[in-house]
Image (cartoon, rainbow, N blue to C red; front, side):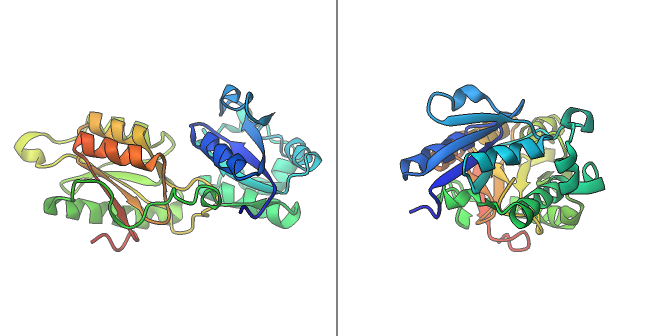
Length: 283
């Protein structure tokens, strides 16, 4: 049983919003998809669900729409490209929500400001995605058929240490490490672009030993209600093409999309897939 009868899905890119809509509607929830303009494809939803396109900077219009639909419960799902201030064109309500910090906050800081305002000032409630997809967070340990090679563990430790050190800066969620060398840190480009970039930087042959490792963790201060670290089959495919050895994510604080398919892809590509309990506990 869901703790609500109506749900507004604020949808970004990818197929995860559709999975949430399908699961929620399958459990009898009245689903409305609020499609972020220029971020998500309306055709994915229009035949099955009530849909409305909303603009990211039009906060007042969006809140008025949600109220008119009788929706109090929301979930934020899907990838979003952060727009420039010119593209955002924030209305008065949007400026009220984040104030002068609009373009100064990192992604997590901005999302936390929005969620706090919606809940404390507008009486709405933003649910974590795992309220609906209760099987999407991986458990700790080896997820696929391949174990982590002993010589890779120092790279995993270093990747976790780097991400923990950067957490307060609200920069990115992922880092790529090979033989103790940081090949790349995720910023605005996203994880797939980071993987592709680092594929050109990897060390090969005797010098390389093993391929690069992608480590992707939740920031310590990150809200669990939006933008948790996410990987899926496409992540594995990108890592395999780039010659990586494996992928590390965080148990209970990350999203594993299409779990069986993702694990099968890692096994087929010869990549290990590991979920760690905490950035400081990777053994």
